Amino acid sequence: MSILRKRNVGFLVAGCVISMGFLALAIKEYPYWALTVRLSQYKHYPSFMVIADSPLLDRVISSHARPRQLSSDDLAFLWKALWIKKDNAPAYISETLRKVLVRKVSWALIRTLRDTYLQIDLLKYKLGINDNQELRRYLGEETPACRVAENMIENVHTDNLFEVSTYFDVVHFCKLSAPVAMQVTLGQLLQKTRSFYSGHVREHGIHDVPVYVNDCSQAADENERYHCLFFQQK
View 1 (cartoon, one colour):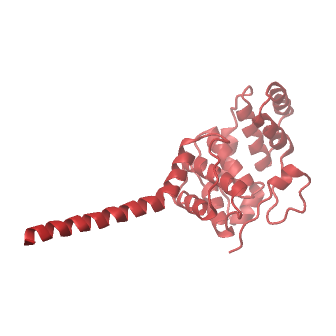
View 2 (cartoon, rainbow, N blue to C red; view 1 turned 45 degrees about the horizontal axis):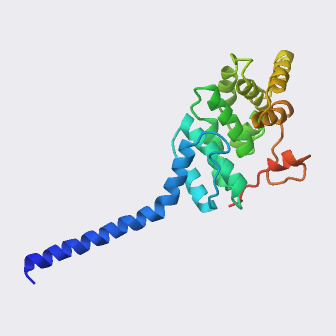
View 3 (spheres, helix red, strand yellow; view 1 turned 180 degrees about the horizontal axis):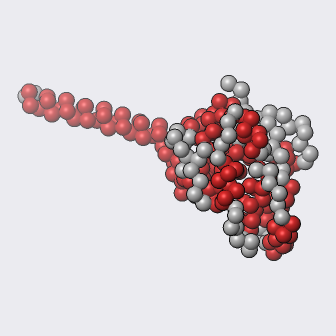
């Protein structure tokens, strides 16, 4: 075999080895890529819900908590990923990751009322911080979360169930007083709306369901038990 032919065969073998390496890497990374794409594309519950193993979810959640300041897209992504983790994984996130997420979420860049909804929902129902006083104690610092949220709810549209329910999320979390007129408005909107979302608002917008952390013994009913959170101590 000539030197040139041997060289060509060597290049061919090297190319095959490199290609197989890339293929193996692609196969290994496919679950991470597929889950990331699904959570980015599907916006509403339950379309984004999937079954994924715990280490994969941990990796996805940690990677999207890296930005110095979380954006609207980051909040939406984490909201969905943590929901899946809570409902489908055998163990929830660690206390260490919880602390990172609480700080990042509370300092997120909030531009819209939907951002406010995601921020408050994440802090309370995904991270176990019931109100702004708990948030202050947990982090040992004041954050802009409630100051920004209060500004966001100043001009809600009272004919929009999502906006009115977000108003009450903020009222409960920030310990504000809701005018009687807004309570009447919420009741009227709930009478007009028959959907999964209206049932959720009835429980959380009116009753302010508490979240118990690492101890569910105080939960009064099935709804409160569902929202209990148990963080891994490591």
